[in-house]
Length: 127
Image (cartoon, rainbow, N blue to C red):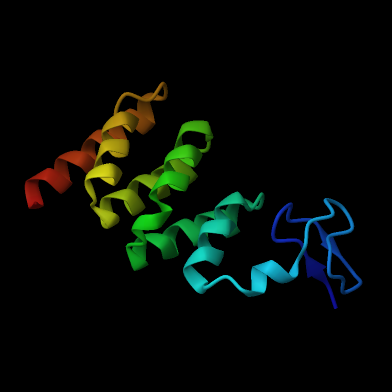
């Protein structure tokens, strides 16, 4: 059986109370609710897992994930991930989420700017 750390995402073979790599306690993750675990998954290094977590957060309209999505969107150069973040922020639809999409409409990448602008325009037309 394999185990993994919810803090540094390293995997290991032996069950442990603390991560053998980063030393952080592992039992605290069990106390988190599903939404909190999804927000933790926004730190996951594997692209598909990260994309899936962002998509689920959008479908749940999990507003408390917005600050973490904001940080992630600013440091990410992967268009697929950034576009998923834009979709999720539009689904959430809070003032803070929409503001982040507005900021992304001035992103250094022209494809991100275009995608964010179109998503924002569509959102504003329907709300």
